[in-house]
Length: 69
Image (cartoon, rainbow, N blue to C red):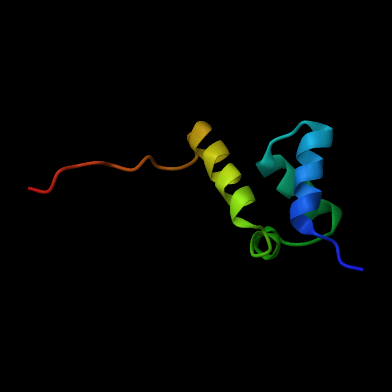
């Protein structure tokens, strides 16, 4: 039997009404794993949602748009 991490993360977000970042931390704590290991198993959709949350929380640098000189 295989556990789909992506489905589990989506269920945590929906059922507990928490952010994707919080869901991944909770999942990692529940399975006594490392975030780096879990991150490798996430699909592109969840990674994009995490990136959007991080931008909203100002946890990532905003891209700088400059014209070349």
